[in-house]
Structures are given as structure tokens and as C-alpha cells.
Image (cartoon, rainbow, N blue to C red; front, side, top):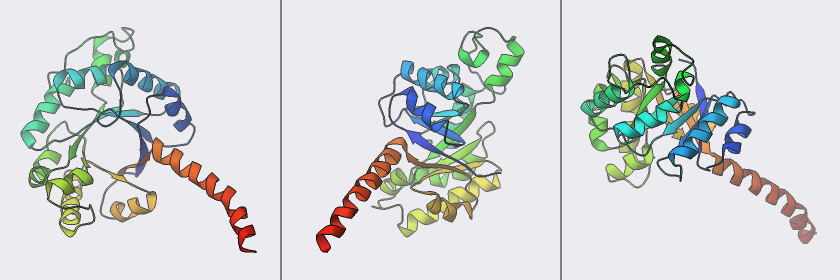
Length: 247
């Protein structure tokens, strides 16, 4: 599978999606788990993504049927579902997100179905194109990662290394036990022929994991990009002053 890279979006403004659409990223992930996005705002973010030709995924706050259904109905390119700890939970997610092989509720009126302009058969086909990723971020999920990755209807796994570290009693994703767990999850995804995603701070860090088979990277966030850009400007302004003080 080819390498893909995007970023988290934590600012509830569709203009952020518009700007990212000009940058050549493969996707953006609206973080409705850790940032203030309600259903109406998610709708606008997905709309902006379609206008900017940028696939918009949503990290949903939970795996309730209503949450998954409403997010798919507005036309999200895919879902990143946190805290998936077992193959049974993954199978329930499939039932709630798939028409074929599942029990997703159907309506032809939402955006994903062309607001009623598509026939039912085409709407079902397009609806099932959404990418479903299970986030593995607990010690229990690591033990079940092979079964989660192999669950029919799941497109991939996403490694949440920070929460995984906490679950394993470690203070850093760099702890040897967390690194070993990360490698096991990547291997499970590769063996199942699925996407293997993870959050990284930079593409340089991503290179370490792409060599193991990870291929879907969320690199930083809109907040990170804004902060880093602002710091570079501030440092450039301060540099001539510092040189003058030394002379």
C-alpha cells in the first residue's frame, strides 16, 4: 500500500480545511474526540473538504451507533474510532457502519447519497466506500490486535501510542514495552493486508515506522503547524537583534 500522510484538525473552522486542501495532503482528520466539534460543525468541515478536494476523516468521540451513523451520513471519507479493545467490538462497529455485511441505517437524503439524486444501489455502494479504522490504545487491545485487524469490514488499525503508554503503565511512547507493542500492532495490520495508521510528530519520525509497514500517518495538527510557523517568524525577527547584541 502506498504511503499516505495528513494531519489532525482541532480548530472548528472550515477555512482550515480549505487551506489544507491547497497543500497537497492526502487527507485531514477532524478530531471530534479531543476538540470542540458538534454535528453541525463536522458537517461544515466535511463540506469544506469536498469543495477543496481533500478527503476528511473524523475521529469520533465514541462508537455509539448514532455517532457513527450521523458522521457517515454527512459524507466523511472515513472514521477513526478510538478505544477499540476487542474483535467483538470491531465486529459491532462493522455492523453499525456497513450496508453490505452490516446493519447501517439507510436514508437516501444525506450528503453521502447525493441528497436523493442517486439511486439506492449507488448510494449503498458509495456509503460502503468509507474507510473504517480501529484505534488500538490499550494493553487489552494489543493482545487482541491480530483479531481486530483481521475483522472483515475493518479497513485498518490506528495506533494510539500515548494512551497505550498510559495503559501499559509507561510514561513515554519510547518505552521499550510500548515500542514492542507498536511493532506487534503494525505486524498485525500488515499480516491482515490492512491500513496501518499512527500519529507522528514529523515525517522523519514516520520513516522509522514506514520501514516496518505503517502506511497511514497523521502528522501533527493544524495547531502544531500554526505554532511552528509562528515560532519560525519570531525566531527570524529575534535573530538580527541577538547578533547585534553580541557585537
